Length: 116
Image 1: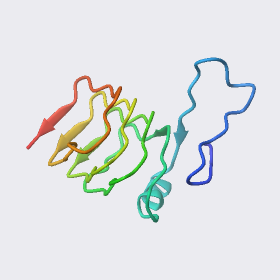
Image 2: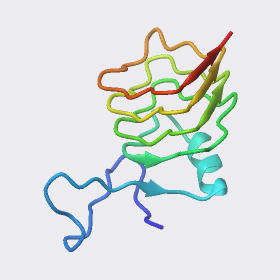
Image 3: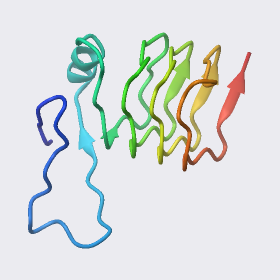
Image 4: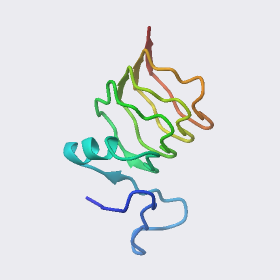
């Protein structure tokens, strides 16, 4: 598990980084809860939230660029102005989520499910 200050992207260890490598930051359930209840804006660049149930969370204005949200449950999530650029949403579930003002540039969404 890697820790970093909110608002500062993590610096990869030199022995693990080669050209093109990406490092995901992993959190416990408690840490995710604490992150989502912090002052705004949320800086969650490159965070690994795969298979996490974020139902009803307020991610408005959050920076989730390059995050891993594969298989995440995003039902009723507020995403007004959320930066989802280059995010992997493969298999994510949406329902009642407004993405109209979200930045979706380069977002991957295969097998995602959107319900009203």
